[in-house]
Amino acid sequence: MMKAQNVLIAHPANANEFEVIKAFFEALKIKFEVADESPYNLEFVDKIQKSRKQAKEDLD
Image 1 (cartoon, rainbow, N blue to C red):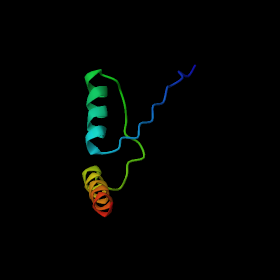
Image 2 (cartoon, rainbow, N blue to C red):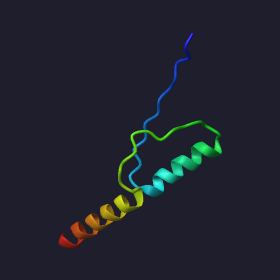
Image 3 (cartoon, helix red, strand yellow):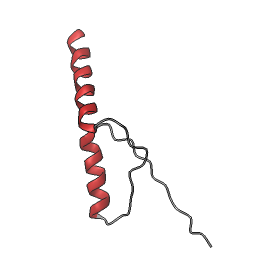
C-alpha cells in the first residue's frame, strides 16, 4: 500500500524568504526537496526586483 503525501508549494518573493522557509523546515526536521529550481541565482533575481521597484518609485 502506497502512503499518500502532502504537497506544499511556497512562492517566496526573494532569496531571504526562501532561506527563512528552508531554515524553518530544517529546524523542525521536516523532510523537503527543492523542485523546479530556477536557472537564475535567487540573490540576482532579488537585486533585479529591487532595482525595478526603485526605478518605478523614482518615476512616481
